[in-house]
Image 1: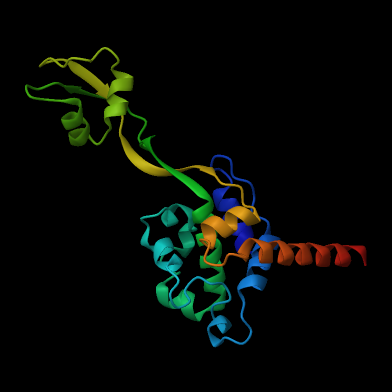
Image 2: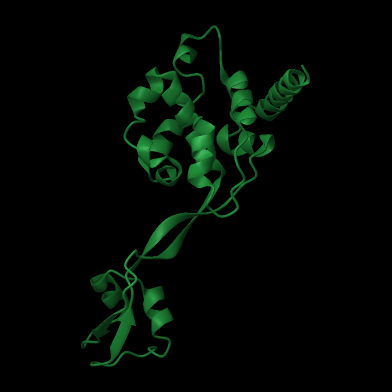
Length: 211
């Protein structure tokens, strides 16, 4: 269910390929330690002692705010992810997707479609006008291509806009990239273990389908 919800949430982003739930099951197999009590509530590595992934995801500074489902923002907390297995898995999936995403800062038009006008005042610059009107230099330049030199009294048009972090694309969600970007090379054998677990998961599914 969690994987499906993330897929629905992110399917409109550039280049997104639906996450295969079997990859998450394979990660759980690799990361679950039956003899370590931490893994009773934390079946994925996120939130275990010494793991920085949870803070990265919840800080909102690395793109986690774009990955997490709106209904789960605020529900996933440092405490809940460390004590509730279902929250831990959701956070682990979110962190994986955050590390697979490619982020960029881009000019984003506001929800208001109205085109406004503003007169240039002495001492104005595009930067000053953009900040004062809740728009961007790029938007001003796009709507006013002849305004290379500003003159007092000149009228410019603009739309509301802002510079925002967006998901610009995705790294392939394959075992080699998961080992590199999600596991961070902490385990040199992570990709090999994940390949083995994923193969076992897929063989198990094939066997069930054949019955």
